[in-house]
Length: 283
Image (cartoon, rainbow, N blue to C red):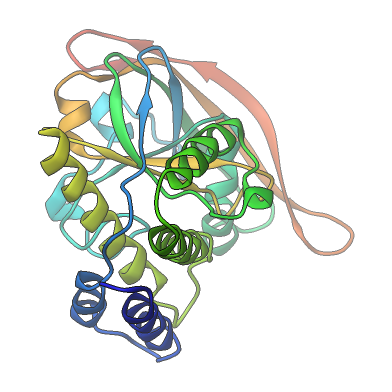
């Protein structure tokens, strides 16, 4: 495919996003023709720690690791940033702050001022190197986290060895992909149908290329616009033991309103859990 043709299909997907509701099959049809760009595969090294948060509004203690892990596929009813319905992904972040920020809009919609609720944080360790597709910006100025900067340099170096047409295609494709992954999901916006389709295209290509059982995708956090990075791991990575829970804690939060009327979520208590080899958690 040439630059003009690829640009036409990317523009067609962008136009779909201006409709009240889009057909995911139409997105897939156009993505089929988006090719001739490199797969940017980043190795998440063993020893890396990632964080995942789970909310509870019923003073509930999660007593099984499975309750703070990825959900079963049949429980997934809607599109997510990297999943289609009935497809489970283990979502997490590279730092402790980003999981909280990712949940704020959910809290605003589900918590009243003065209400207490709880958030359980899991700190997970990458036990064995994991291959991740990176959705990196083609614009160096938009790379904020260390992971984005590192993978961005690899992207730039790779492009330097390509001919001009392929460089233009790669910059165009990754520029648009990064733009879509950076957009917030809002009412009437089917951006998740686009990003989940891209995720599956990239992850499946990487698995085929590297003969992998499972892979991940790394993309920018919308909530942490200062440079947060999120990951979506395929369940096979967790289930094989390549990602392991090493620490968990439970935070009690109260919802307050500041003088301007905006929510202020304040921590008022914390306790740590004990992880057992049989998959149980005690508090």
